[in-house]
Image 1 (spheres, rainbow, N blue to C red):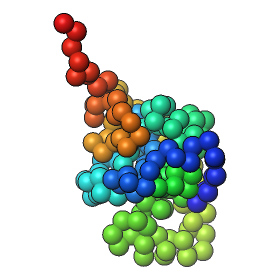
Image 2 (image 1 turned 90 degrees about the horizontal axis):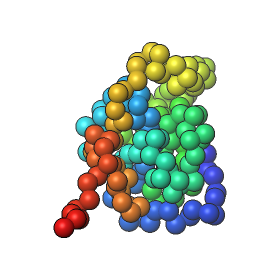
Image 3 (image 1 turned 90 degrees about the vertical axis):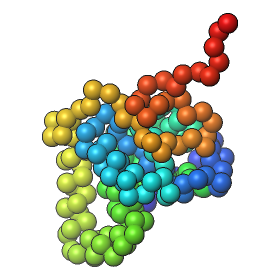
Length: 168
């Protein structure tokens, strides 16, 4: 876990968030999107809300840059977004938070060499995800977006949200 204290955005999200964790994922990556869809079907927005790493305005509210995203998925605590996990650590923490996941993650971490191998595998998949799994034609925006920060300006298909105001 990375606990990065950044006083420039401590109030980016209040503790009244509807989901206690935010997942930042690659919305153009087939593997990443399929894993987000699986997590959405298991969780239904109860514990996790999502933003694609291509949604720079949302990420900026947490002090996350496109360069930060190059190191892999990011998991943030909604009530303390400066507390974050990235890469394989984020994947492990998500697994730990799922029902019955804590035992599997504890065993994974306890077996000698397995955590190290898992970290190297994550890095290889991260760095070659488009070649291995393909790149989507359209950005995937989750059905459970991070919306507690103001506007959710993307539709689930990644298209801009239409304004409810019409010109007369």
